[in-house]
Length: 250
Image 1 (spheres, rainbow, N blue to C red):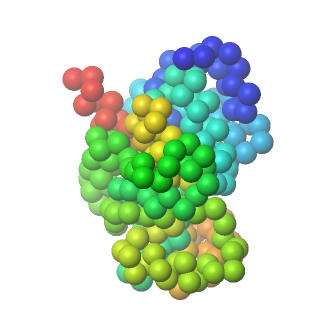
Image 2: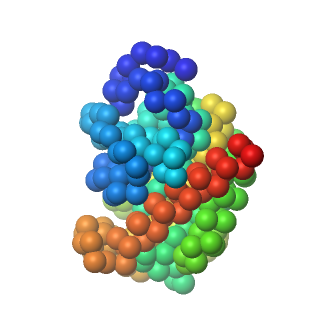
């Protein structure tokens, strides 16, 4: 644990918590704050916005990671330095399967490593997988809340705008990959290497044949199914932390 000020997150190790939720979007940090007791703004530097609070009495942090594996890796490393060793990503994704729709949840059991950040750490033979125990608690929380969810492998990538996006999506869809995001593989790989328990739950904001621009623009509308999905994933992740915490403190 490092007591010094973390250079990017601009926080220190004074919070005495081992838990953090990791949204990508800084605006989602404020949505999580609505669920917390005693939410407190800590820092906002670049894409990294951090608050503290309690859920069912359990202290935790919420830190936005920005877009992509590179910035996610910075957040994971600096949160680890601040004493956090249980992290759940609460992100958005695009569906790669026709039967997975906007506002439904995808819980990642593993990730295709099509990102550069995880490659910077270790060869691709190293798996991008969540902590099994934390994954169990996420699944249990989603089932207990009766939220429509899918469990399986996703793909993490680095761009929405390559010349072959449709071809790439079709390829991985045929391989049974459920959805695509930009951060989960980096989280899983760095977490595994650093001894951090990690998991990832994603809210579908773009359907398989949907418009990227339309899906993301609709996501900002509080009334849409994708926005409702955001609240479902936040609730699920918080309940997973609560049940995990209870399980290790019995």
